[in-house]
Length: 455
Ligand SMILES: Cc1ncc(COP(=O)(O)O)c(C=O)c1O
Image (cartoon, rainbow, N blue to C red; front, side, top):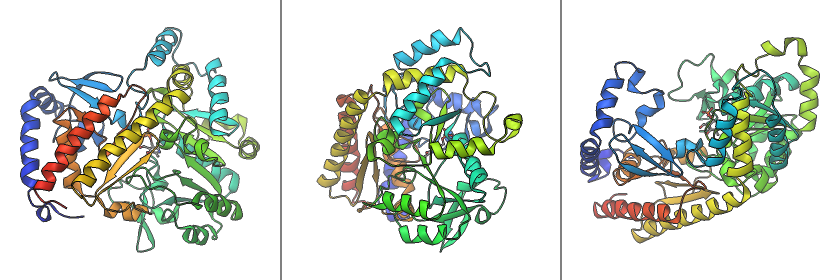
């Protein structure tokens, strides 16, 4: 990663933007100071310490693709709750369903009819016949892993270098010269991740074959394209090899669609005809109300039903008291029936193309050694000239100070990008004008950087 000193002029630009941010957000600054008294790190969830301005913007209300803050400023939101609000904020059908449902019971430990509709709809979209529900994608992944271990009798999980699947212990592992090590920043790992996890690079079928040949891997847990270290798309033929090799070695394939739902109504799986054994999804599926789902092929569902005992179902390590609560199911029903529809995706993906073209035009105009990648309605730019093939290549292209500058420059001009990424998501409520506003602001930022002769 290049350091600040190797990027002439960036420290000056960053200082200017930080000063502007602080000046224009006095109320957020005041609240963030007060928050230090009662909240760890001054934030309600620790990731929020990573906002580019040094303190987070405190929001008052959000509708569609926009939100307002406590200082009265309005923003176009391309972060959309880091995918949780890919539906747009508070979409009317979901709000209506929540209002109707909330007055008639929120959680019952009993099924509602919504669960059946949602299960049938998920089967139609993703091609897997049977489903269960959880509250977060992290939990859906945890439960999928436990079930994969239970039915294969194998201990390990295989993940990709620089993946992210939520706070799943087994996935906090990276490669260091071919060795599996703790991912930098992993807090309190229960055991050495080399004991639980095999790690390979994305788009490397030979490594996958070699690691699965130990025949101790219960499941591969994979996003169908990496999305948490920039977007790293699969090369042609990679998914066919992944499926072939997992079958050859008796390993189950778990596809995590939590972010790649952006590829279409059935996620990447639906758009590209993947055939996973299990599939997990969370975040946007209930418009931001906590909800997640995990689905099984008929073979896996039968094997699970043969393996787990009804008498001990409540202590088996999958499920949870509030999982499949009737309120979450009502929100999922409304979201799938009326918000994230085929028509909505067609619009969102067209907006993604427009956003991508806008970014590309600025990169071309200033001959910047950067690139932009899109997956459906999700667009991300990385500060390296070529598209990465692997997580390690993408990680090597990270540039913390440029990231911070671009985020802050956008925020100061009314645009919220997704933190930890240079990522933008289009919702059903996003407009062409919103996208063009980003194009103009990104064009100004790159012009300033080019003038400063930055890399
Ligand atoms: C691919 C993927 N899976 C799972 C998760 C976990 O989602 P949650 O934090 O809502 O549990 C994330 C979160 O970013 C993710 O990117």
